[in-house]
Image (cartoon, rainbow, N blue to C red; front, side, top):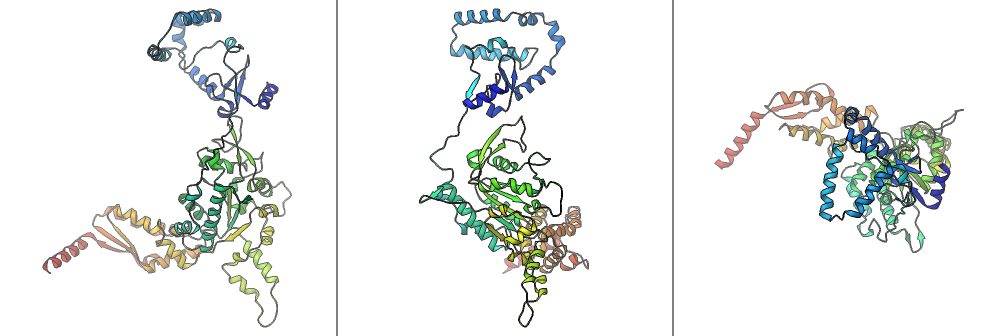
Length: 511
């Protein structure tokens, strides 16, 4: 059977299911039955479930059904031939007969099962057992129109509405995505092949790496998949295979191979696959993953499962070419700053006007001076870094940026809480002093913008709990004293507000 199956693949043919008539490329691996009959796993599973729900007592009591089932196959065949010669049925009569047959199948003791003679199916003059493999059609019209490509400044303007700061990172990503669109839409420019520019994004935790790419995914009409490198392992070990990154992109493109081959993949926590130091065991989740990703970054044909994250015999496979897929890798790279400081301290000198070693310890943007040699010492192999030509850093957040993140973006945290209290007909306000106090507490936690929501959740807990109790509350003002623990919020009663509005209206009428 195995030799025949391999021979069929070489001839360009594949098996089809005798029940649902789907080819092996869509239904998955076929089960080989006697007389060269193939059935897909889905139909076999439905058959077994239907048999398990059969009422066998009613079958034993129905003698007419048993007698009809025990008829020899050749008698059934003769009856069918005679009926085909004698009866000439019109289209309307066929529809009526189909409707009556559906009622009969529902009344059968074996639901959803039709008994077939395996010897009849194996005849040479019967239904063909093979189907020609379908090849993807290359349409002349490209999926992406070059006229509809957004310019870099327009992409950056949309990112500015959601992301605070990080001007350099937003500019680099806007230009890279714009060039990726043009590369996909044209393919060549004056017979010059345009190479893709994969990117490596470095920044401290909470500076907005993942949020920047997620915002880009909402703004662009291109398939984008966000994967995590922490779960990737070498093929054959427990964990996700490297090809699972591409299968997520295929799922984001609704299993459309052509659209998936023109998408973007963001691999987060890329620093977690750095080469382990001082290890004598096999590094299946570090250097091996970097080596396995080389073919993906450069461009190769990869077999990925359709509708699943892992390869197995029950899942159909498809081939995706990664030559036009743009890869963006991001990571916090902890302790990379220390490696940079050690390199810079070696360049210091002694004397008047010389740079002091303590100068680099206070530099918050030390990651801006990163080089490829620093990344190699961190644990990234040279072959992997060579396929990521664009390396840029994101700045750490300071107090002013944290205050802007609280109130300026479209989906800012304060706007979310104001919307929640508006549903209870209560206004929520924050003093400038309160915003600065929240930013100072976030800097102490040293987790970036992620600390802002945790702090606000802590102080808003009692307010969100008490407000639904009293319908007279009209406005709540968060103060600096409440954040620092030396006072409480200012609560305005609704009746006072109504009185003030009535006084204003009376004054306007009097005037």
